[in-house]
Image: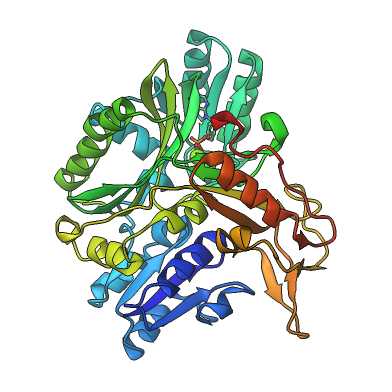
Length: 422
Ligand SMILES: Nc1ncnc2c1ncn2[C@@H]1O[C@H](COP(=O)(O)OP(=O)(O)O)[C@@H](O)[C@H]1O
Ligand SMILES: [Mg+2]
């Protein structure tokens, strides 16, 4: 099988790495890829959807997998499907589950999927009166895509009103914020649950937990994610069952009934409040860094999972996972997440301990290949050190042993990934 992967992060590297180990896969392209994906396949300098479809047609690409949300929301799947090309991901309409928080919240409400009490509005007056009816903290969300920065957890009514005002005026997030969601604050613990969907059927992946804050103990600013692990013991059979019955099934059924069957990764942001899973949001693609831990846990061939999902054939797939744990630690550049850092050469020491060598690997993200052929840290989140093990502790210890072997000027990482599970 020949596969094209859209994206350039650690997530796409991880998908490529899983496919590279799959004997059914003969060739992988990345568009645009990063400085290390060229070791797994070939990088393409193409971004235009029609040009990508031209490439897929001309080169006999059997399957295209879309990593990030932006091309999905912009309709890359529609362009490929219109030309009869097989692609894994939701159509633009279905991708509104992530592209518009208002669409998502109203969808959840229509289908009785549990979510925080909310209003959607473009009126400051309505926002104020709903804010007044809630107790602080109060959550204010811009409707559109804001690269993970569009949510304010306000600690007071005044702060919530100020956030609502800045968003609605267009000053905070431009067009993406001229409609907002105001909702009640949910107090609990957060999980990422992923279902691979083919429009009707689905496969639930082991639940993961991400670490959004920059610093240990969940302090410091929010980031794209500083590390994750899976499966998390914070999900028991009861929660999986509730997610299945109350969330995933009604969502897929609802999307189908409303004429936009969902194909791709349904990423369910869950807050567990007193044992009940409440939905914070949907995303329509893998989380990054969760994907970097989930891909190595996949025992079945990755091509089978993605191809059968893309072609509506998941009911004929038997997808299995390793009975193991994975922990991923993000190594970020010096000034992340505040500003970009100067390029820094990455040096990776040889790992002598066989046990560590065989149970760890790196998923590369913000890296570029220099003219000298060396790898440089050039992005915010540079790479993810992944450890596998029979327990979370073993996987965590291995991941951190690998972290100790990776050097670049200004590197920073959390030292407590998976602490909630240990
Ligand atoms: N209602 C809520 N109660 C408590 N925390 C929330 C709530 N909504 C969002 N959050 C927090 O804010 C983060 C970002 O919100 P989310 O809805 O996932 O938006 P996005 O990922 O698009 O920024 C969540 O991961 C969660 O930690
Ligand atoms: Mg989120």
